[in-house]
Length: 164
Image (cartoon, rainbow, N blue to C red; front, side):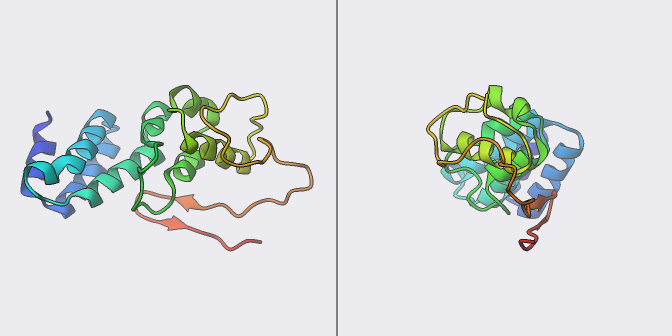
């Protein structure tokens, strides 16, 4: 157990936990960030502290900034409930399908992530998508489709452009 993560959780200071998420991301300490996420999720069991905002922010930052193997771990049902956008969309905005696919758990978030990559121009017709088909759409853009307005995610904000 990392002492800085344990101390921040023991204090229950959400501002400090968010700053710690920033430091862990800057250091590319994905193990530490994943530990912080898990410990914040479980904090209420031990101390009664509600640290889910820090857990949600850690999930968001893993999906956004961590390598595909780490980002894929948070692409599960129920994760990211209070993040700026669906984690499948967040991860797809910064990762290619090939970086995520080998690590994705089977389930609807995997299918949604595949479709988000398609919206960003990736042709996945030959890809094996783990889990059920969640959308009855091809895994490639058709020539007649327009360029889609896509959300842009950053560490502490997101932009949602209006359709063109």
